[in-house]
Length: 368
Length: 254
Image (cartoon, rainbow over all chains, first blue to last red; front, top):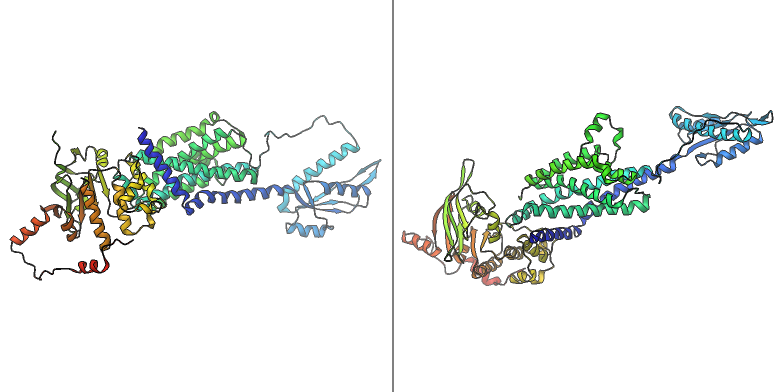
């Protein structure tokens, strides 16, 4: 029995060496997913600095209190004040060009002292396409006003609301996107690897030659599973190595559980690659099948697009695509710190697919 | 049991593709340490016959045994007994010759010293080269040594010298003779009559799926002459290939 596994080991080592001598293959397996990582990482990093509102403050009041209030607003982190805009007309102009989100007008009466207290009403000007930000801005200014009111005329407030963030470590949108990217990498490593390599080896007559030796299909399968899993893991490790320092990815869950889950995921997706690559006589046969398997999963399993935007019936179907539980599971471990035993719904779907895919792949394999 | 002098027995071998009978009841025996040639025009069924013996194609009728082992019943055991040199020897690229030898040995569950096998075919200095850096002749030699890593009892070659230059062809003949001298039986197909005449101890000529003649080259020729055959042309003492070899030498080119 041990010589049978020695055979598997030699084939594994040889194919690993071959991969690392092939620059094209290295590019597609390791650099290609990184390109996506950079694209999505940069987009969501750009979004983060965009939470502030661009506003103009039109102060028509001469009261010293109004001046003071403008200064307070200018210090507000959520506001980016365009100081060059001083009239309502130019503010309207800027709004129509979307240079600013809204204009805050302090009328001439703002800050007048009545009954010993300064008072006034600010007006938020906005255009139709800025409704959402104007509403948020109004709420923000209301909060500002009520904290001022409280200082000037303390009142009892029996009912209050506070909000509290429940994630111990704060996660940003990219932490969620990242598990989609992991799914994409697994899809690439598991499907494209064997789907390109097998038909190529068949064309060169290499598998035919191996067929004349006592090498068993399971030995050849196992060595390919090992090498492709190793490649997939390396590719994922590189993603982590880049994403953690550069895009501040936070992994909440346990790394060992994540590792086990990812290995299982790669083996699952790889089964499809082995099936198609093992069956196809040449690249031309493999390509259309590859598209059929890759594209639905790429778009419907939540790699790049969140699945919650899909209609419910579509979600219900795509729940059972092999890649969906992979991405969901990876997300639950990395962002929510769930444990493997909590992921049984995902693992169940994956297990069923494993039982379906591998016997089929094994049956479909052809040496030439 | 007395050691059988016959290593390979084929009896009534048949292969049918739909209406087309590719191999139609072929029978022959190959002795230990013999070079056996299968000749015939394209489509005669040579390669199909070979591939059935190599376990690559299912046998539709008849039997084939190698060293007493039934080809159809124990294909994996047969694969350990035979070495196969395909028509176009394909090896994966970006893999060193030593690694490929190791890989082939591993396919048979064996561990070998690759250098030895490369030295056997004068490729010792190419140990770290990739197959794609070899010339056609070197590739053929490498393919032969790779097919022998497990010390098989029968060695199959399908049109081994097609596309080689005269020097490489002659070198390959020498190699095949060396293989035979090691006691390995060689079964080859070829389109070159001179090759069959030089190399083969016995020849089977196939046409339309059947063996139409089987004997030593010498006997086949004298049988033809006995039937009163005469060549129209006077036989020259040398031919163009002799001229070519005389001018360019026997030394193997890269």
